[in-house]
Length: 389
Image (cartoon, rainbow, N blue to C red; front, side, top):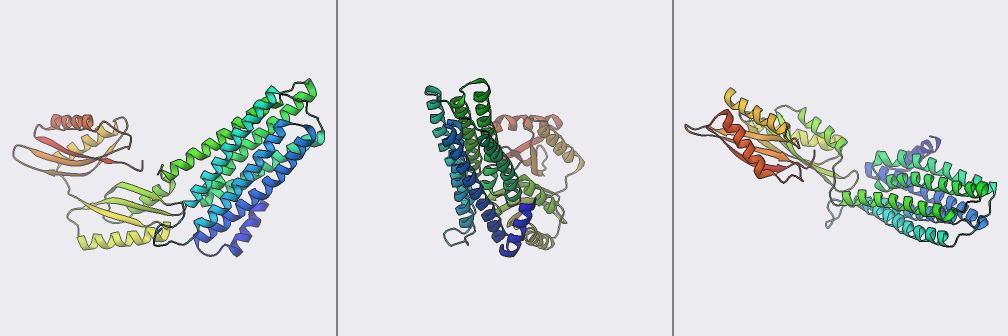
């Protein structure tokens, strides 16, 4: 797109060298674009509403005005998010972008409620709207602008993971539907004399309200610690597995402090008979490499794993297979054993999803599976929470 190429030139000149400064520059460009475009559309639709008396057109104009306000909040949040860390905020201010998206969602919901009231008023007290092809053409033009804004927001917001811009992209699509509904109401009244303006205004309000609800739901989930960025997490795990001595990984957790500001921790399984000094050097190098490649501080915990004999290995494989077929599927890790004359302890951890509540029943099932293989087997099980998968 020609416009985004122009933005790339602007950011390359004024965006700075660091990732944070470039995020701020891109976020500023996207927010200013939204402010200008939505103010223009709001002016056009207010003019159409005043000239035709259309409640739906006026409602759509107010919606665009709220979109401009949302872009202003997005601009403020992206500027604040780039503030340097302080003693009281050692993880920075990256979550200000989430608060900006939350503010956008609140504005959209408030506007949806107001538009709903206007739509009800239009149904109870309908008024004939004046029709003009110029007004119709201006509304069609506004749809084209909103489609263009959608692609601009996506093109700018996705690489920098700007939640406010991505929320605005979603809102732009709902605006296209809303404006299309206004055009339909104008044509129906022109062609058939049907005064459905209030009903269309009501439909617009519901679309706006739903868009705001989605923005609020997604943003609140992020603020409460929702699902991590799996694309980044999968790449990071694959990189960790590529190092010498690493036989397996588990207990991977990502902590989100805002777009581009993550910390992570992971447990790596290493051979119990390996050189502790050599493995520690590998882990140190791993943490440095991960930070250089992903800009993610990584804390690594080593778990020594002894190689079991064939009998014990068969029991481990059987328990893994049982967990893999369980609903939901699970995994085990840190498997070790303590042999004895009358009893052999099988000690391991099971990764369970956060919503799982059947630990006691599953523990008994695993113990029964082990005893079916060998009456001497006794399982000592600890359940972990799987925060990633």
